[in-house]
Length: 259
Image (cartoon, rainbow, N blue to C red):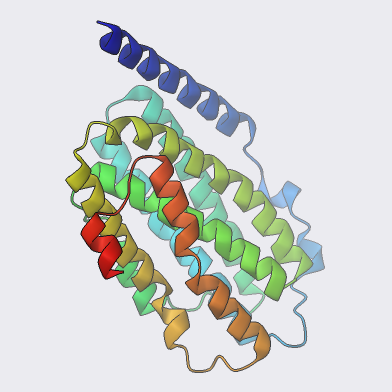
């Protein structure tokens, strides 16, 4: 009885936290015309070509488009009202982010194609071992978490004031999406056996490795700043590992030994 009461109380608490998150999402909606100083235009440092900036920012755009499609799919499959409410606000966020990045990219020559490694990773993230749980885990913890890291890296290596303003607004929303994933997933993953959670960990690591492979394979990276960016990118799994372990997803002993 004590265990049941604790579980019921935790479920009620998670429900209330998601309600508060949804209310925060509603009050935090922003309008791109009013919130962004578009008259400034892109101002790139001399060491970054317009084409390199266009290719880098375009991957953020493609990530937003992919995540918006995932939200639409989840809304068709999930019938929990409070979760659906969070996903509806997230969908609005993702579509707004994509529109803002596209508007910025128009000033650099338009959206560049998605990197094939990233495209493969985003596709694989929708086909995990636990259905919608896998998808939410992949997009809300790893993909959204990686977007936040990429924005941080761009702020250092591509210090354009307009892009910094855009990324600041986007990052605030993305942090809320990650919070949603952590609240929801920590409760649903608690009921999964350790071997299944270890399988999820290995699957997510494969997705992340594919999503970042384009950087490792780009032979045009020659200057010191770009080599620093690559080193920073390769170290990113430690960040995701910490986030996954906090919600109950960790590797098997065999995977750790092999790694």
